[in-house]
Length: 336
Image 1 (cartoon, rainbow, N blue to C red):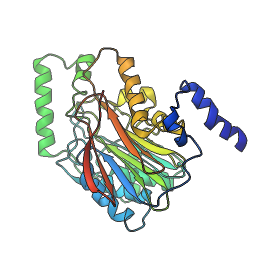
Image 2 (image 1 turned 180 degrees about the horizontal axis):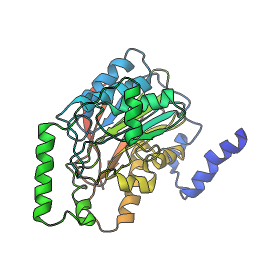
Image 3 (image 1 turned 45 degrees about the vertical axis):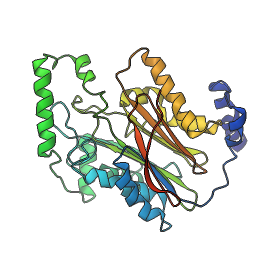
């Protein structure tokens, strides 16, 4: 069985992707990333990744585990009402409800997820407990809320005055345009660059282990019950401790269609560097959508050896990187 698995990893996926391992990238194929520099690193999406990275770095720099770092890190924007797309103060759905999605994944591919969770400020910690304390991967809606409360979480009102004001403004605009009953027009309101800045975080610890997390309030003005890619393992987040990890941000429906983060990791397994792996999946999304230019998707990837990269459809995506050599810095992603 182990021989068969090695065969699948080293040959089958290579064929599926068209055998495009470039000569200069072949050394990064599966099985060649066993060496690690023992230097921790954490990367995360968007500028709110800077304070999130700082919290994660406190754990990594003291020899802590990546899984603990990625949970602690994203709890910072979850609790910040000024980060309008994550946690407390997040964008409401069409009916004025703040519903949150999150997932987490460790070096052993243990994972936990919650979706459409209301009244809980830190969905990432609920997802962690789904991973640690249940035989399941995902809990949703009322079931996720009941589980959270049984674990000691308290119900809170997550709708801040600013979020409510923004929601009322959107509803007024849509009513003026008589677009409220038109789902396609509603969809157009959720794909601008202003309302999809999920935080995804990837970390490598001193033991050479990878973990990742992802948390969001989802697209602004979404239909009630809508779930994007962020809590879906393989779409919004994927970790393979042999190779690397990836996360996504942007219009979740398009990420789900491509199993985006898992595909980025598989491309790295087959020799692509992190940036080009992200670019490949972005290009697939562009091809699928034809001439459509009004949506944003970005991917962020971290390889087992500490190399990282990103790529997005539109200009404007950035990500934060914290390591011992360079400190905490924000980098603009290349784009198509």
